[in-house]
Image (cartoon, helix red, strand yellow):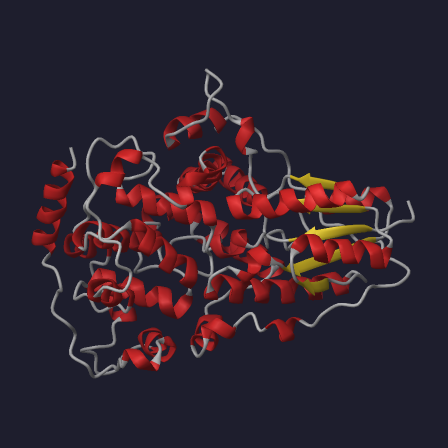
Length: 470
């Protein structure tokens, strides 16, 4: 083959265990890696787009080390790919699959348009352990509850991770590329970008090191430590999985090997990876997961849909007077991440104590998370709100005060993120203040606020509304 293949990269910015790259190298054809700032990227939130730019920059350096390049173009995906095919003589465009509705619509348009011009298109697996349609119930349907899904995939082998290619065949000449800095992917971060960047762990090498360190140092205690936001007990890999800097299969294989070596927490880690797959399984079969209540009967629940209400703004700024909620919301704004236990607490507080629609929280997270993931963000919010697929026969209302006493018993988490009342606040707490917009008018010497909603009263109000829902 002398005609080059355009390798359209999206959320698969790595070299190892990359099915598309491995097969493309085997063809012997010249390969032109491409990243597009397309219509889907353009609509991403501030923090996800910022973090994606860091990943693109890192992966471009990795390709250069192999004698290759990453070609950058901005514009509608189909238009950019058509132009590149015409410029390079490429007769094929390959990409890794996406599963959210917006990306699937973009890919379908690209496939139809390119196929009509005689340009081969292929999509490859690689973002998940198991393709969503490959896991079926005994009756041929899809799974609506996690535990049966987990059991159905427990003994399935996703395959061994593939090695990274030693080189990528290059074309005789390269097409022109735009400059990443001209895209200004950090533009909406404003002064918060420099703060959040301190907490990012970017690129394939860093992701691999993060996984290895977690397996050696923390996976043994993961079963209990993963619920403690006051200690470093999780892998932190959601950030890297989001952009495909490491493959889910590599993480899964590491979990299995740790389990075989006797690490008690490794099975819990494996199940968390399967939960990620389950989210995409649901999203594939029920795209409404992202945009509306998965259970239609929750349309009658009297949530407020006022995203600019005083209570929502107070929640966003970490000034609710509930220390667990406020610490978590400040962690989010300063780092672009939030501990999973904290996500449950702030989600429960918004949807139950503040009686606010989960979509408002979902959209705030989509703007603030550097590990934003369309399937996991949507499933997480619907799970905590009660409107999603859920086998639990009760209405979850977490008490942020008792949860704080249980999961931050020494107060380390709240001290890390709440500056008010501390004579010498730690760097983390000051970072939140540095990242926050000046118009919020926050400072370390402000008094810490009283609760805007009493924990007991908020719970009672939510339960009353749940019972009245019918």
